[in-house]
Image (cartoon, rainbow, N blue to C red; front, side, top):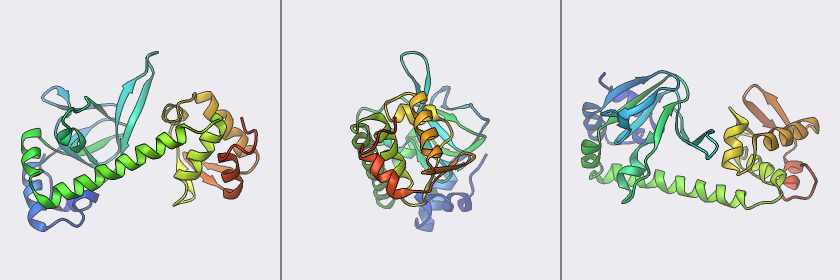
Length: 224
């Protein structure tokens, strides 16, 4: 299915791109429709190329030693996938799965590498990757915090800084990223909720007492 230039312009990577770049990319991309839990593939193998999430949400997943599935990275509407492996000397094989019914505009690895020769596009992809590196470093800093309860509070404090809330689909995903257990995440969230520090509305968790959450993030209280 062909991709329209209008659909690409709604994505972060191409929002301010020159019209010539958008038209070039749109003419080479095609739209892949994925059902929930369907794997994004290239010629029957894990996706290799450049993709833009037009609708839905996709995740790079792997499995722990005990067989549990974990999300390594999530990409929402307007996000870009595949560019990290295209530019890396030693790429990591990733399995991209649709977390919900999704549409992804994709470009094969050959045309995608040719496209990366465009100075404007390569600069913006580099900026996107630099932001990803910063986020991973932030995760590492948070993972070094002890006890686990303070670590969870520090993550919650950081990720709610802009909107005052976070969206959590599963406690298992949070637990894996914070190097703890789902039970620990659930227990800490229950206590924070009981103290009125956070409030819940479906998958959305609002921070009600930000100053108290900051105290707990520094391990100044026994929240675990």
